[in-house]
Length: 115
Image (cartoon, one colour):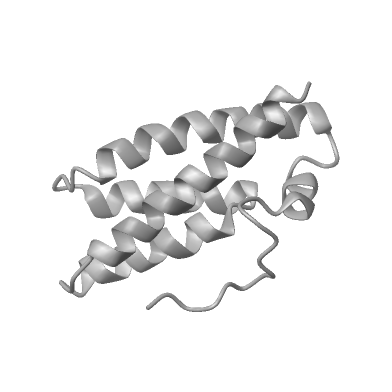
């Protein structure tokens, strides 16, 4: 079971965190979100196939999600990493991670289409 988030859950993306990371530059925020959406889609496609390097892929996704404020993805990726490390059932963690990525991607797509 994942631990509670370290920051409040404000939805798929914590925009206060993202703004701080981008130093208030909205163009940079949009660019980072677009790159994250592409990377997270690519990584989740690989992760669901459960290759031998799945833990490394989940860790990479976790780091990227943390940077943009996608804390639901961060928590789910950490849960998957933990399940893999403990050799426990990872199916629920994988499903939660997949859902979190899809939710964040939908949010990002909506933001990028607004302009």
